[in-house]
Image (cartoon, rainbow, N blue to C red; front, side, top):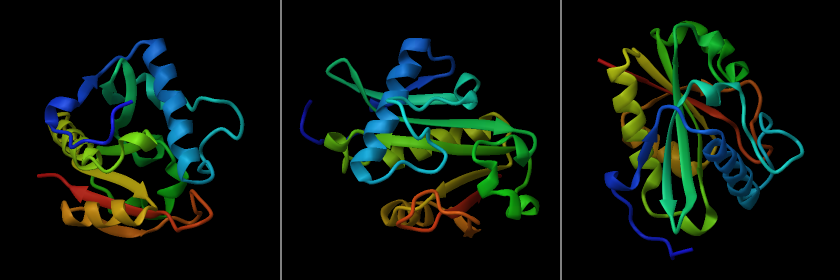
Length: 181
């Protein structure tokens, strides 16, 4: 794999209906990326080498390929009610805060060898843009990493609050929202 480089919008590939092989590779990357940073989050499977869930079938996905392999991925799905979103248990206490329909940005993962290249900001921009085109009135994202917390704040997301349970033991899960015009 190449050394980390700076990426641009052309690095992202948008997939509205990824095939089973692509989803399997994304699922494996999710586990590799999380385990490189610490324990798997509470919503990930406890065993196995891939993390796929029911939202993967209808979500929009973005990937970055290098040397024929997926090295970064993110997804976004839009729902008319908050209770249909991935990881709803983190959002239940904030139900009245989000204008509907709402887009959920989640499952952002980057291979450890490809980090520090600006990909989270590119993924966020692409997902927010599509959410607006699809008619979402707000976007929600839950994070715990300090760098992501700063970056989301810098890009206009507002803190809604702390999720009732931590996704990972080492840090609280912070719920962010961006209202779309």
